[in-house]
Image (cartoon, rainbow, N blue to C red; front, top):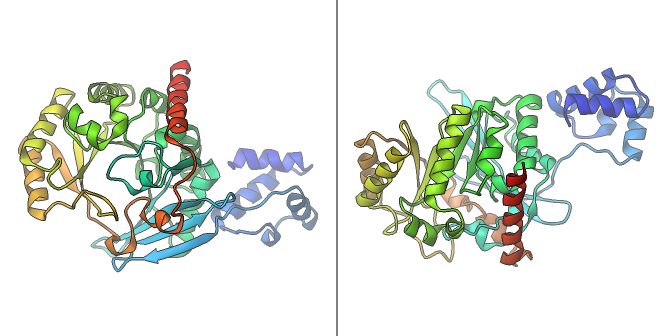
Length: 364
């Protein structure tokens, strides 16, 4: 809850508004997890809050895996016994200071079922509520005993299909937990009409669009939802987003050996991006192998050649360092080990939800 919401809560309990400010300080600055420990508040108020069912949210850790590179993946248990993943990625710079990135999930599973993604193989259940997103960041801070400096919405799920909760969580992460907007990235594989909605919030955060292919035919084989959202329409929406927000879109591209990682693919990608604007950035992601996938991780030589082909065509490029290879760090991989039965909501229901998302976007 925001400071204003907490102030209103205090008023609802017959207290003065400053008690809400105290609550905000205790929750977000002191990071106290139990109402019983709010000793600055009157005992009577603490009792009333607890009797009314209020609590300080913390999802219990169901399982934790630590990689040799310091990456930690948490499997968090929700109130309905579903499991959701979040990952903490620490990086120490040359000066010795630590940047801690939390990779958070926005849905339980994912309805879009990209062919290379472990999350989609586990099915889809529901959207996460805003507190269930924020609590992932707090869980990472608890484990690392260090404040999270960066947040990427690149975990389980499609953030644009849960945009209301994602934007609410973004506000909390920025205003209450004090993570800079420019330190937050929202990723999407593309959902029709949602970029226009996101643009209205005028966020200073990065929008990262997952392309994974330089043409429509290949993209449909990798990203099934591309059939309903053609590449040309996606790129038009990216350009409109830039014109509306003055924030350039970043592009994610997962390299799959022998599928989309040739120099010819890189040339085609550069041509596509130049067609729709200038100054684009592409983040190349060598595929993180998952059990049962037909895809393979590309050789380092192929990654270097792909990157060089883009750079030579004036497309700025970075190659994401793969973290947590020994910790089931591919999105959805660990969850699937513990929740082996695919989640119950079927593809038809997911399709209906995507259609409903489009209708809401059009109505707004």
